[in-house]
Image (cartoon, rainbow, N blue to C red; front, side, top):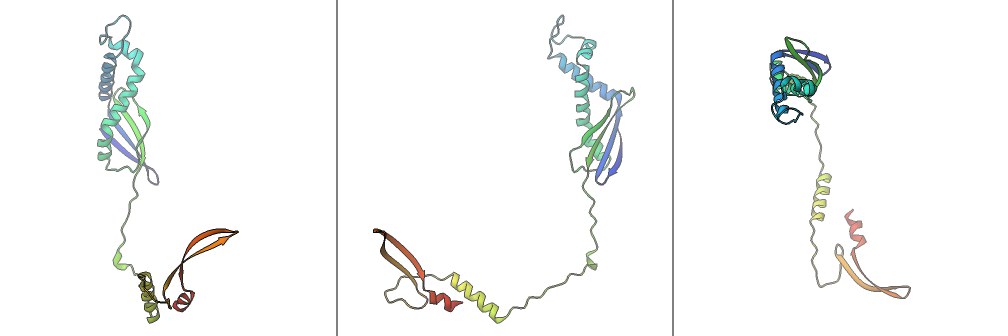
Length: 193
């Protein structure tokens, strides 16, 4: 197997793989033998059709299948031989099966970009310093305390900071409605701000 890698543009590469024509002919014969076991041609028993007749009737299909088989069997080794790792699935762009001595195909694909790591000892990072004041601390602690506050039922008159539930009946256009309101006294919030 002979491989040659060509850099097209940017990350795009073309890999040409050259093999012996005998390998391609062998794969074509295998495909034709497989077809012979499945087809029925008038005048011949199943599996006993001569290769010359099979080549005449199914040669194009056999060549196409043989190309796929050869590419599938050799592409991984060819990529390894060329020391390249494709980032995308290789597409077959050219096939030369007419040559008497060689069979070749070309695939195009993209590769991963080469990443060069810089010398971090020369990189300077500006460190930001946050200044936290006593007012910031107090505001944060007050917010945490308010978010964790639990209200419990008590038997006394309401006072500043209490949560009050009012249950009353009202009417609208002569129809009675039952409404439950959850109030936190306005002056509590005014003081907290």
